Image 1 (cartoon, chains in turn cyan, blue):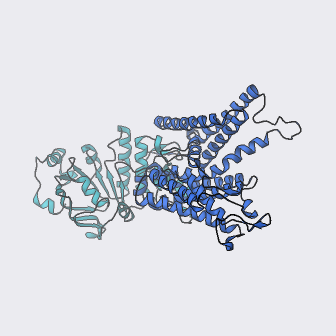
Image 2: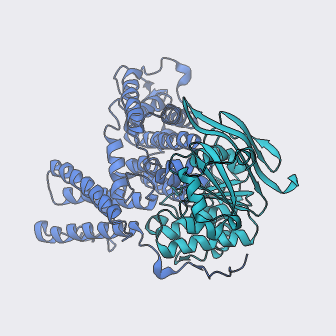
Image 3: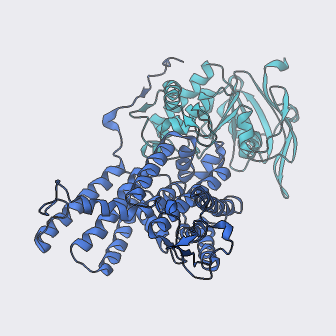
Length: 258
Length: 357
């Protein structure tokens, strides 16, 4: 049973001074599962994700990745452990072309020579094309700087980056917040492709339709607590909203094992 | 994975959709400025700027003038190669001119000959007779070593204490100038060995400049170091979260820049047969100007060595052109200043438009 457990947190808690941003969050993610995190601004969902991605370190509590307890000192360690994150700010270098962005910090080399290692540009291009083909995005020339590309194209580059590397868990922080209708559809298609290939994913979103479209499960944060853990097919938009606004209070047992 | 069921990605390398390289703009500017001097020359002084009009001299072009154009920017150009990498990485280096002064003084002291016209060397730069007539490799290694040391200080200050590069290199600028004055208490150092004088002899500065330019253009295009220069200058936070060693990279960038300033100091002192404490004053600004004219963005992330070389040539053409038109040297400086500001205005305008052309 525990073998298909991708991620598990036990009593994950984060205090900023006297502010209890996250209290005793118990969460589980299984193989192939796509889970949405919802909640109002300041409800604790971003704090929760920051602990998972190593941007911050929890006050106490455990994070287990594939059954092994982990504690990340920085985002790099989380990434090395296989947690790939698409940040809201995308973290792209605008003046680099697409392959350079996809492989930034993890370049392929023809031969190694310390900082002056020669880049294997052909291999990186080929891998980038392969990753982007899954995203169904149109990029006329991959060699162009990404500064002039559209929001959707840039988003796809950021997602292609996570998909290029054999990741064990993908986290997307409001990937469509800044996108238009067509671009949003594009990104949603990518998420569906990831679902089809069985990659586990955590999606933070405010978009109810999107969440019901893409995810198997919805968890709701409110006032730093994980208040609801709802299977998509056993809940409704109204119920989720009720949890988000606090109109409906959490079951005590939900908090114990989300 | 093959094409997904949800659509076909239109990913390609469509040449018609390729961006217009900004170096082409610089090249066009260079050609335009040369054409301008050619026309002005015909009208004002009745001579050709570029073409050979002297009787009894072979060749289509005025090769003497072309050589001067390149020669007079080669030494500052070597510095500009280093400054280009610094600016692409999002930094600035104000210390290169002073490093030239300090390294020239130190290097020259280790390149002293024993006999001057049959008499003992009158310079008391180094009071140790064992340090006369050293093989040329000794002063060169010492000089570049001093440059590397200065660059390590610059880079470490910027990377570890996170003070702005402007301040760190300003401090080095003042200190290194102080060092070059202190080294001989203000006296110039002359009488280098014959082998040392060959380093900057004839067209050697041009050859060194071009060789280093080619080397570092390749480094910027094809190595991890080069890629990270652009990444850090473009978005330092993104580079850091992507796993780029930003601290190590910054130390390296400033070290290379200072090492190249040291190379320029060696070439310059060798060519002038002397070193003075005031050597290299304002070179850092000329080098920055060359890079900016060459299309390197002061906000980081963009530019090439090719652009900087073209920028240096524009510099050289303007200096030669003013001399050719018998214009006062004061005008040169004024026009140089205007061109620097104009280049930055153009760069800002290009960025605001978000355009590539």
